[in-house]
Image 1 (cartoon, protein in one colour):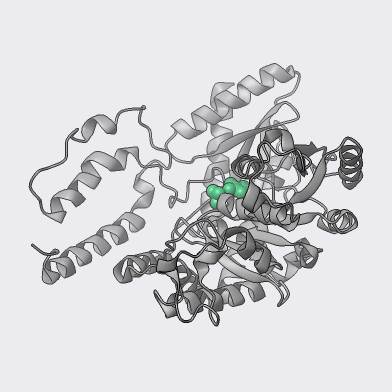
Image 2 (image 1 turned 120 degrees about the vertical axis):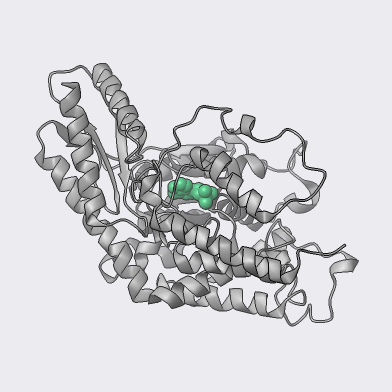
Length: 476
Ligand code: PLP
């Protein structure tokens, strides 16, 4: 009884790479958004597993026959919903190598090259986004996980014995409070829920007309909370909010955090990669004063899911919160190396840093920055088309590559406009040509178009605009 014979593996591997190459070459033949109903795919899959093995070729055929219709194609250039996550060629190859090596980087000893490579990539990436040398980096799966570790570190920094005694049933500690804007990503709330701060432990700070957190409101909230017996411990500033990519004023927020001794975490999951572009350096103002920051290469740096980069100036606090070493994980090198299992909830770790190595080396920093910059240029152009068209309006500023807009032919009540735009979005997505998403801003139903795919070219944005206009013309 053994593994697949090696020559069969070689042959199937070539077939699989051919399959992926054809898929990417012909991707535009698929609709970007899967046009199936709930349960359609599940009923095609046998309810019981096969007792005898079968050829990989059969399995691959069934990917086509059973799954493809239910795949929403994130790699499709018509995919302009949410924030793009696209797989570049070098990223896909790195994924294959990660599985081929199949190593687990829980300890330095379990693969010295893993730990040291991740350290080197974090050093590269730190320089790429212009963070100072005192930032220590680690790779997690997603920004949700990264931010949860930030919140846990912020709590640990309080030195209130939460690690030993927990939080529940204690009358020797105050209730904790953290702050973010009402536009922060839901992962911040999930992080608070996970570490026991609870949703009541989060205060949503009001935003100004550009949807940026108002620092005066933050300070007011902190002072009121202190007066009422809460213990403020953490502020999350977002650079590139999910709905509309607004930017919280990090410098002013940092000053308030320093005054009140609060942990400042920056969520730059989407927009952080733009710090690579010289003209966008302004977005990093104040970053050096943050305690931690998350940036997701799997959003806008052409990295297959998943890869989130977390930097902190205080890795010793992260380690204090999470390190727990049973006998069977002790090694002779413990005193001289970093064992990455000490810096988070997970023990086993995938060799994700290989993806950064392949992608950064293949495209070069300039190549990555040029591609991302081109997306910003295209978004500005699309925003101008919207602005110039009398029946459409921009609903938010466009600092990055996401455009929030709506159809507004005039003299219609807000409720009717919302219904009209909801219907327009449904028709756009049912066209099978492009996939857009939505949000609500100040009660308005807003359509979002994001440019950030490695496969986005000007023609795709032009085609999207023509399609949107043609659907509104048809419905009139
Ligand atoms: N933070 C921001 C600003 C986001 O927009 C998102 C997702 O879109 C996240 C965090 C969560 O990302 P992940 O899926 O990596 O957890």
